[in-house]
Length: 252
Ligand SMILES: [Fe+2]
Image (cartoon, rainbow, N blue to C red):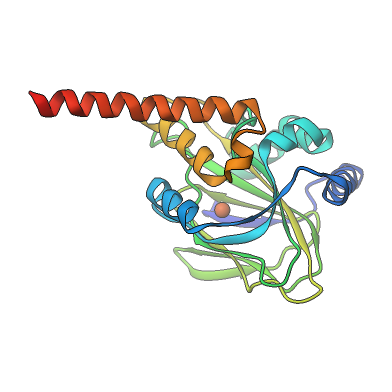
């Protein structure tokens, strides 16, 4: 496949309707899902970890919430889309455990100015020859926003209607949601990550993704879910080991 593409009507109508109504109800009723506006600290850490980062303003239902509260969405990710996405890509890809990660998220652009700037997705699963893909599913769209990408063809922007999915590779496809949301507009999507090799082969890759997961969310989220507390503990442990090792080397 080319490095990015839009595909329409791949989901059965009933399955799409289940996910749409589940997400809509959750966004209306949930006391949990947070409105994220990136702080300079978050943007700085993410740029340090990812190398590329688009400042965002949007409402996000994080992976741990999807895992706990959105069964239709979870079923779509684990049971239905792996085969569909594999067929579309022409290679086998697999879903991943999502608690404490950024691998499956609902993003709702609902207030004027909501957007995400240019960035690349960067999940370090597998090794160089194993690719990782993001699958964006549009659930609702009453906006003029488009998903824009830069690849070998330059900047291209795609309109997405409910049920459309958009596939692109991690690391190589820079993307953004443009323009910023206008008055009275709304756009809701689900982003899902699939990997050819759904494991970490090196410790630096594992620590990179742990740090990315921890840095992406506000402090309140870190303490809400046990999976995040474990992530935080592991990152602190990695930092401490690195500091001790560095100190030992410098003394030699
Ligand atoms: Fe992205």
